[in-house]
Image (cartoon, rainbow, N blue to C red; front, side, top):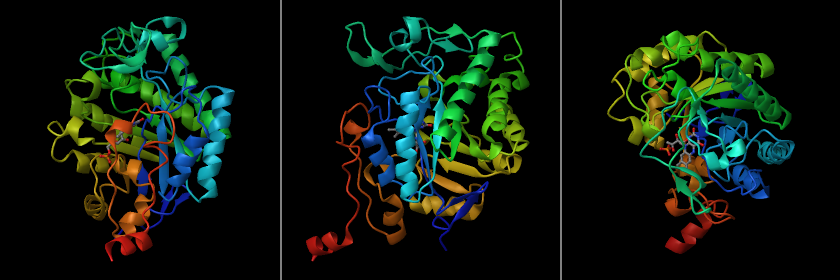
Length: 373
Ligand SMILES: Cc1cc2nc3c(=O)[nH]c(=O)nc-3n(C[C@H](O)[C@H](O)[C@H](O)COP(=O)(O)O)c2cc1C
C-alpha cells in the first residue's frame, strides 16, 4: 500500500503528495539573483508535494559561496516572485530555505572583506568554501578564521532572518525553512565543541539552543508558526563539525523545545555519508516521540525506503535530493515505476546556463516503447 502519493495537510497548506524536493544549492546565479532559468528549474519539479529551495543567504554576511541567490535585496525578492509564480502556476508549493553560513565563508565575499562570523573564533579546517582565491579567481578556498558575534549582533542576525522571511512571504513563498543543519551558523552555536561563549548564548544546552529558538519564535511572530519549518542534521559531521559532549541530550532538548512551538515541520537531514556511524540506533523513534509535529526525513532515500519509513510512522514526508537533479518528474517516474535517470555530478555546481540544470528531460513512455520495441 503506497503512502508516498497520498495528499498531506501541512499545517493548512495542502500538499498533493508526500514527496519533498530537498534543498539543493546549485550556484548558478552569477549576480546572486534568481533568473528565468531558476524559475524554469523549479517549475519543472513542481509535481513534488513540496519544494524546499536551495539555501538563500539572508544577508551579505550570511554568504559563504559565490553565485548563490539570496533573499535580502529588492532585486532578489522580485526574482523569487517569478519563481514562486511559476511553481504555483503548475500547482506546486514552495518554501524558501533561509541560510546564514556563519564561519563557512571567506573574507573575499564578506562585506568590507572582514572576517566571517560565528559563535566563536574556531575556523573550519580540512574543507573549502567557494570564493575568490589569492589569484583573484573564483574557486575553492579555505574558510577564513571567524570572529565571534557579540551578544547584540546575535540578536541582529535574528532580525536579519525575520527581514528575509518577510521578503519570502512578500515574494509569494508558502513558507520558510530555517537552515539549522549542515554545520552552518546554528550548528556552530549548538555544538559545545565550537561554542565556548560566556554570554546567554553559550554554556548550557538551554543557552546553546537559545539563538535557534529565539530566531524561530521571532519568525513565527512575523509570518506565523505554520509557515516556519526547521532543518536539522543531528550528529552531522559535515564541514569539520565534531562530536561533542551531551550530543544526544542536546538534540532531544531541541526536539522537545520545537515540539512546544506550533511549526510547519522539522526536517531531519540524515545524509548518510555524514552521520552513519554516529547516530544512536533508536534516535529516529526517540526524536519522533519528542517532536510530534510534521517530520520530514532526507538522506539516501529510495522509493522503497521512503514507503517503509512512512509505514513505520516515524516520518510524515520524505525528501529526495540528488534524485531530483536528473529527474524533474521524479513523482511521475516513481508512481509509474519508470526508471530514474542518473545525474552528472560534474554539473551539480558552478556551471552557468541550462546544462545539467534545466536540460534533463521528463520520461516519455511512448518514446521508450518505440526504442525498446
Ligand atoms: C548538489 C547538492 C546541494 C545541496 N545543497 C543543500 C542546501 O543548500 N541546503 C541543505 O539543507 N542541504 C543541501 N543539500 C543536501 C540535500 O538537501 C539532501 O539532504 C542530501 O542530498 C541527501 O539526500 P539524497 O540522498 O536524496 O541526495 C545538497 C545536496 C546536493 C546533492
